[in-house]
Image (cartoon, rainbow, N blue to C red):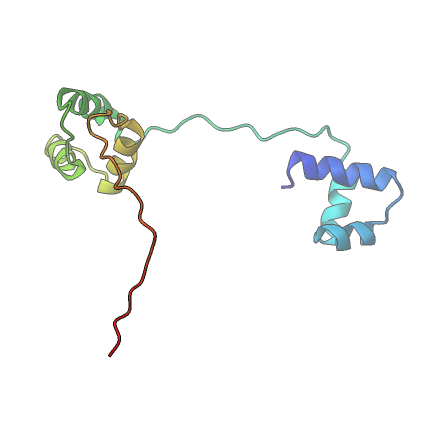
Length: 129
């Protein structure tokens, strides 16, 4: 399915008198695809997103969030969290837990940031043999 802008562009160009073959060459679409979108008189609409599906991690999210908040200022290793929720009945994988925790990480405080070393010019000294 073409994006809304692409559909509008095709319709505008055909009304200016461009040929289907010319549009096909210019856009890289097949002539049949160009014909399909030109002949379709339906208004251009965007696809609707479907309802959010339940995930295996959903029942454990409140527990993970609570564990992350109680561990402040320390950080909890994700592997440890994974083990804990696995014992509580989680059937999913580690990657999904990592993705969720990554989105929930708190920003570093100024005390945790390490000051970078002053930059030095890269000088290469070669000894003579």
